[in-house]
Image (cartoon, rainbow, N blue to C red; front, side):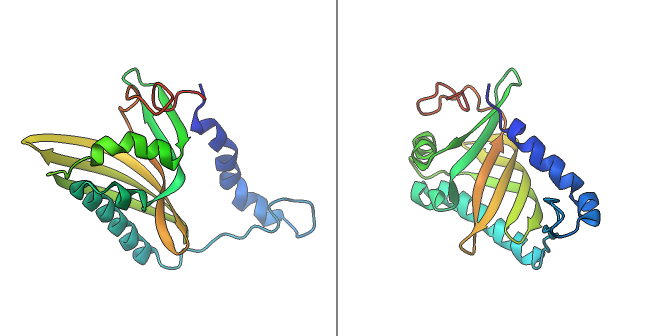
Length: 184
């Protein structure tokens, strides 16, 4: 089974080792870390406000049933990550067409729901951020709660969703795959 975590292992190890490696690195020494400079986060509070606004726009699109508005907030291909009822994690990059096909039923009509969020945003650089969210949705007298995580990138000056992670969707059929994240 293909998982997104295997491909992330080396970059994460490199990121952890970067400060120690960079301390001894000399330009032209053949050390791949020699030219790397720690990025600065210049406007963290502004970035967090913009990302909170993006969450609001995504929620508003859902309430209106506006799939086009939701698609405009996503940078495709988007990494979709979940697990199934057995606890098996899975993930895959979805094209705009795949994402639209799966999300269309959720946006087929306006949603009358009350949402609350407790989002924690961590700005990695001026163009990379991640958020964890504990949310509650009440609709039709039924309340549902969950946890999710979103990876954001800034492209063309705008924050966009690059990855979505939420548990429990593994049994949901995905376009042409039989289940979310099934191997290609």
